[in-house]
Image (tube, rainbow, N blue to C red; front, top):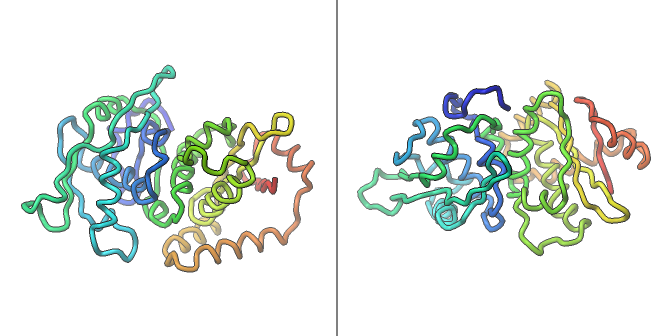
Length: 295
């Protein structure tokens, strides 16, 4: 979303992060775990609530960074340390890029800190870069924490930004760029069939079960080779929103089976022929259209 308003001038809600596009459209995060990818958004949101300033320290309760049912700080540390070590490549206007460390120094291991609190800071170049950011995505934190796939997190955050765009309901992305966007490790799932099975379909299924919008992912071919991905999105109906919110509140145990059952149930309804799917995918996706590609 962009209407001339700066991200830093906005006041985020408690459970909804307003995340700058510069922090969504990152690359170089292939090695980051699910917890580390979620931590980027949580740490940004917490700092945004406290007020972003160069050189400022922010504090957050460790409980906000822990996965469900985990009481120790081991998994928090496993997320924090890679965020200090990983160099993220951030897109700037005019096609330029900047490399930054997302996270600066922190005192989680400081014995004098308040119990259960992490104090941290951001790279000054990151703060400088985000000062004029005017494009963002709205990230629902309960949805973010409900994901079990790191690829679903990356796709959800990018789609959250796209879904705010007016007069646009799909995005076409070169396959190599799409892999980088999702943070798929270099050399992993080189064949599209494997990528689709292990990354794209599971991520899309989770998003469609949990997010306030639905998405479709369709491969686009040049000759016989998949060269681009088309992602379409539309807002859920009120009934679907209620179902998604209810699923986000349920335990993760059994979620894959529930999602698989839902997808199977949907597949039992009227299906589109491959030629009709291609024809409809060549047009702009209507907000209430579901185009499920089985290619």
